[in-house]
Image (cartoon, rainbow, N blue to C red; front, top):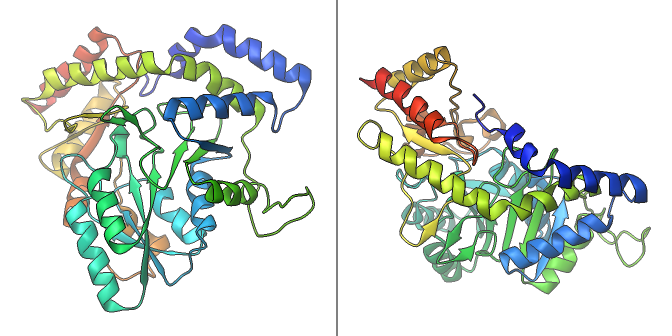
Length: 372
């Protein structure tokens, strides 16, 4: 059994991908080819955003906007610690200082009350200047952008939506990656919309910000190829990866429906045995992961070992919160009780659009037998 089954997905789109690969090999515009422009147009239409820049990775998709905001070490950027490392790494790479925020124990997304408290504390201490918020759409569900944007406006902060796991999610039928001043996503193969390598995209309606990010993603390029007006990155999506994403985007809505079918079936079978994930009213998750909670760390460790004995892959996202990582040991210790508790008890079950009902039932039967 596969945790994320890319084999079954490829069988659905093999003809289209092979045809597009052949076209790329014929025209040989491997960087910046017509597939890249076609994909960016599709992404604009899908998200409703005016400007889209594809780039080399999800990490770059976060770093480039932060570079465009010209953050410095004295700028505080507020980010949840319960996330993949890149959510905070990008802040440091761009020159800023991450300030870690706790999360809601039910949605796993940023705790807006703790966010405002951290902003107030940071401003009162006077060592850092509150500048921006990186709000993560963890496991596929968008963060609480209604309240986050209200807080951002109150304290004059920019909002960067980290939609690396959230692409395809919605709030009131509005798509993820469209909620902040700028949004970012990842096309890593395991993501809801993934390519066959690394890739990412940036979304905004701000033309001035777009022009600056467009320059940064190609070495700080100016009006001429060899005129570099600022420091930048070499961060371009290649034509072969764009070709993969075009074909995957064609079936993406069907896959989202199937992901939600899988999640609903998991919920039905497991609701009396573990704490299942919560999706807020008027929200839609793209279910990058299906994550549940055990009663304790010891119970989780036992579950994972026994599920492996049954050849059922189980993953932990994330066993070490970012604020506990050695890379950020230079920051003052953060008190994030909910984040640390979740890191001890969460585990994720296989999740992809091609899971059959009998496979879901087998996974749940095995898990329930362990818990019983």
